[in-house]
Length: 450
Image 1: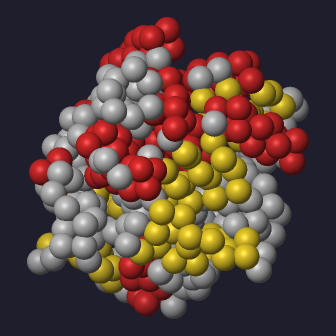
Image 2 (image 1 turned 180 degrees about the vertical axis):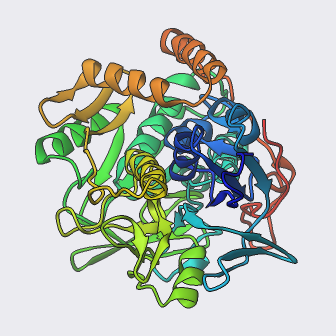
C-alpha cells in the first residue's frame, strides 16, 4: 500500500476484470502513488487469442493462463480480490460484492464480452462459443469425441454426420478454428483410426458476409479463403444460419434453404458485452449500444462520471473514426494503459489528450505455414505471415515460463504435426446416446482443466 501524504487518504483505484485491459492498467499503475484493487471472478489472466489452440489440442489451458497474484506480486501497491461485482453505487463510489463493499476514487471496468447468438440463446447448448477455458475444453471434447463416435458408428449416413464439423463465423477465431480442425483431420490423426478415414471429414466455415475476415483488406480475405480451401475447408460466404437443432444446422443462401447433418457445431459469429455494462448503465444512465457495450467519452470515462472508466470489449469508443474500435487485445491493452496514465496525470493536476488507438495491424493464422498479416505499411501472407504471427503471440504472452513452454510445444508440433493435448474430458456423457439416438453435448458437466 502507498503511504499517505499530509494526512490525505490515498487515492483508491478499483479495477474490475483481469483481462488485457484491466491487467495492463494495473501494471501501468505499479509505481503510482495510489492503492490498486483488482477484482476478478477468476484467479488467472487468460491469453484469449490462443484459446482456439486449447480447443484443438495443441496446447493446454495452463500454457496460456497466468495467476493474477503471480503477475502482480511485485506491485506493492496492488491487491487482488477473487470475487464477482454484483452492483455499482456511483454516488457512494463503491462497488458491491455480495455483502462486501469496496470504495473507490477511480473505477476501471474491464470485464470484456461473451459470445452472442443474436437472440437465439437456445443455440448455445448445440454450438459452444470460445471465450473461456471451459469453452475451449468443451470444444476440444466435442471435436475429438466426434472422431471416436464415428469410429464406432456403422451407419454411413450417421458416420458422415459425426465427421462433419461446422464453424459459424468467418472472423479470425472462425478461420483459425476451421484451419486447425482441418489439420487435425487430414494430418495429425490420419493414421490413428482403423474403421474411419479421417480424410473424409468435412469442415465447413460459414460466414454471413461476402468474404471471410471482413475487417481485413479484400486481397487478404481472398488469400485466407484460398489457403483454407487448400487445407480442405469448405468456405461458404453469404450464408446465414437460421436454426441449430437435433444435430441439424439449417442455413440460408439467398433464397435457398439447406440442412446440414452435423454433430459438432462451433460458434464464432458474434460477441456481446458482459452483464456489467447494463449494470453500469442502470446506475449511471450511461448509453449502451446493441451489443451491450457502454458508450464512453473521448477519455474513456462514462458521461457525467469522470472517475468511472470503461475499457476493452465492454467499451464502445467511436471518437476516432466514427466506428467502435474492434474488440481485440491491442485495443484493450492501450486503453488500460491510457486510463492509468490519465489517473496519474489528474493526481498531478494535469490532463491528457483524448485517447487515440494506434493500430499496429491485424493478423490471423490459417494453418501451419499459413497466415495473413496486415501491418498497415506492409501486407504478408504465407510463411512470413505465419512466422510474424508466431513471434507476436509469443511476445505478448504474460509470463516467461508460458513463453518458453509454448515455444517448445510449437517447435515440436511444427516438425511432428502432433497435438499432445488431445484429451477428452466429460467423456462419460459422450458414449451414451439419449432416447432419440443422439449423443448429448454434456453442457454443464464438470470438466478437468488439463
